[in-house]
Image (spheres, rainbow, N blue to C red):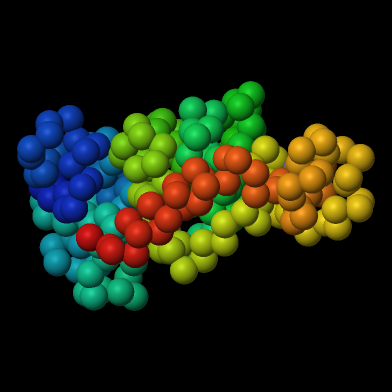
Amino acid sequence: MKPFTVRLCFHGDLNVFLGSKSADIVERRLAEKTSIKDIIESCGVPHPEVDLILVNEQPVGFDCTLAEEAKAEVFPAQNRGTFFTKQRLQALNVTRFIADCHLGSLTRNLRLLGFDVAYDQNADDRQLLKVMTCDNRALLTRDRRLLMHAIVQHGYYPRSQNPHEQTIEVIRRFDLSELIAPFTRCLRCNAPLEETAKAEIIDKLEPLTKIYYDEFRRCPDCKQIYWPGSHFPKLQKRIKDIRSQVQGKP
Ligand SMILES: [Zn+2]
């Protein structure tokens, strides 16, 4: 087969995955028929980050194979425009997640906002992918290789290393701002919290908590009890900050 060149242009912030910071154009010289998905991933961009591919100006799926010279435009899910809305490759409204073991603070923040995030500090990649598939969860990870695994359907690579910024990124990426429901999920184990009468748990409370608080929620799984104690204003401020940042979309 005659060697051929595919010229790829990466839009939005997909250039964070390319080796060089400023360039967003990559040329690939190929000698055999190759899927556009493999060509894109060979540039370092994981497929769950790709929302639209145009080959010679026509929208295509990941399985489109190229065997001759072509131009490809690759778009991220963020700031999705109004063009080719039917040919998009990613789902926006995923509400269940699984985070890798390095994203503990992001997990806590998302649970604080009410989102379902599976997290196991000791899980290896195989276990992570298994839970992802069984529960149909989107994978949150800064491990690019893992995100490129063929069985990953939905996923996201947090750009920032800062948990607060990562939280905002995930809410924007999956369009979750309308679904925020603070203090409804256990921060420790992810189960939805239940309201509980003070009388039912009074023997488990510290003396001052018994006196000053009347509203309690309990985790049905790990039995952790939650009440609006001294840390509450700090958490409320964190939620308020996140809300104000995600509502003013860039
Ligand atoms: Zn719990």
